[in-house]
Length: 88
Image (tube, rainbow, N blue to C red; front, side, top):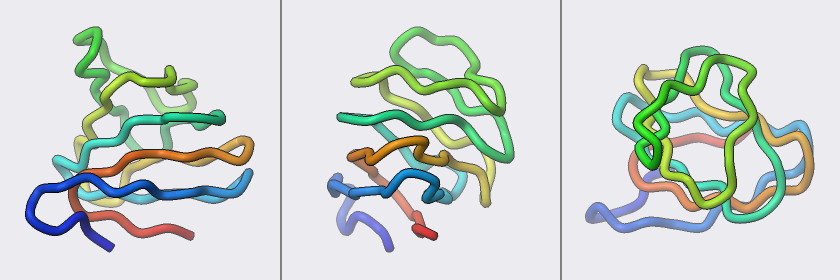
């Protein structure tokens, strides 16, 4: 999927379900818990790098750095996504 016209979409994830982005996809965890997969992400809220396996902080804006990287939910999670992504 993709958020059309640069808008954001809400995406529900089940525990264990991955969301894969493209380079430049933006992700915000609104509820639940998720961790970075495949390639480090940039926490644009703090300016720090979130390494693979790092838990994402709720309400922080993360930037996917590489196609095929993203997050994996560790509980039922709702994320806001802007840019190209796929679930599952």
